[in-house]
Image (cartoon, rainbow, N blue to C red):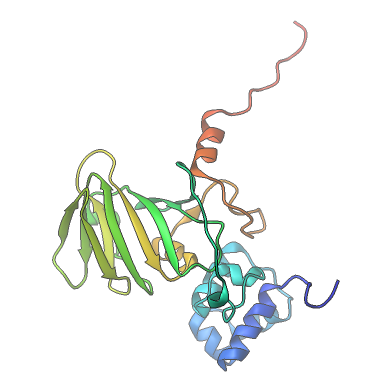
Length: 241
């Protein structure tokens, strides 16, 4: 196997990004919250990384988590042309959070500039919602079903019904509440990275999105997860009397 074909490890990506940006280990430590000694061990492949640590690392570096597994280089991302992703009804990477149920669409495309998400709102009051969230980038939200209430730290709450939409700065603290009984669903298109989106809302991947050692391996559609839950494998019958 040539050096070019060798698998890229998270530590090597960390060192490459840090060197390219002219950051010291101390600067990366302030961005990620990891001690300098731990970052040094990461770069030299002497520490295992769980999914939570990888999320934290990619968020601090401001890169998509896929780059830590040998995805396209930051500088090569813009050169990608002619990509497409088709999603059938029920498809999407299922992510559960206290306030939302997400289906991340076009999950097979890495390093997307826009993150399309089908979101079901689960909470109807700020008390239950908790602290408003913020992350880098911008977002566009279109109400598909029901009515929602949009809260931010700079504007008065606004109520939107099916067919209405809002475009906002994601760095502004914000939150979406279900304003009516019954399903409240929106389609959100966000700039930034999936890592940042998931971390901001405290999301947890569902199904087989994460292996036991914490490395994301593939996306399972919401439909597949539902089938797995609703149709468990029947138990084997005992033979004899």
